[in-house]
Length: 309
Image 1: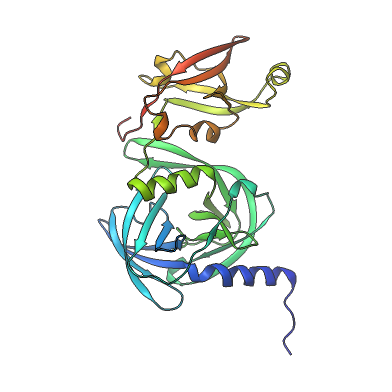
Image 2 (image 1 turned 60 degrees about the vertical axis):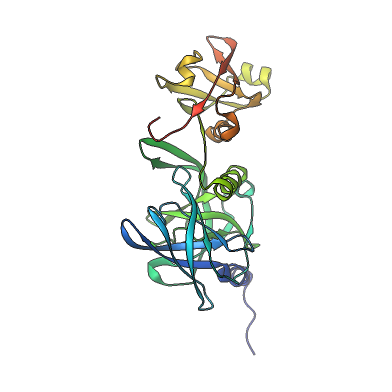
């Protein structure tokens, strides 16, 4: 008679059983030769989510699933500034994962990574959320952007895991594994409201259009009197205003404390970045900043972010 699994093992094996069939091993052909990674099926009609760096410069390749089936795929869209890409297989009966919400994660929560590290298909590792809110630089052309709210985990990740699934204890994919940090640390791009907008743009247009302000910022706790007055605890301190830029034209200055943008409170970089998509380009964006003891309202008109911006 088989002994029952302990609670931890039962959860990990259940998640592995639920997620593994929907994670493919990618063999990629591109301008840099051949590469490998992982991808996660998230729609019934064969769309998979992976990392932009996995398919960098590629037009397609082959996706291999755990049941032994293989299918050619084409790259639908790629966004290096979030390190996300969407590919589509020609034939797939792998079913789909359920996308979760990384904003609901807490430090110490169990997570399971599924991917194809070092060419070993269908590998499963487990660990915990080690930290939240990490930042990861991403580059496209001359543009460098910080991917915010990256998930840090101690689930073992190795080359080839990139593009694979990071799932919670209910088998919902809350992150796309993106980097091996070393020393037992891995990083994953979160699945959240901002990510879903990026995925939708890739599906619709094959790219993501972003608005550009030209600010370098850092989160900062508000002084107690200002926090009591505004009802918020944090704002974004402007570290640098790039010039020329929409922020410079609007009169924003280093040292200003951004309290709101688009009439929404701003407390971290993501709360500002999530406003800077297609519908913000060339449209007036009201901002309220705290400067020299006074509230100042300004109007900025974001440009479209380009590789030369």
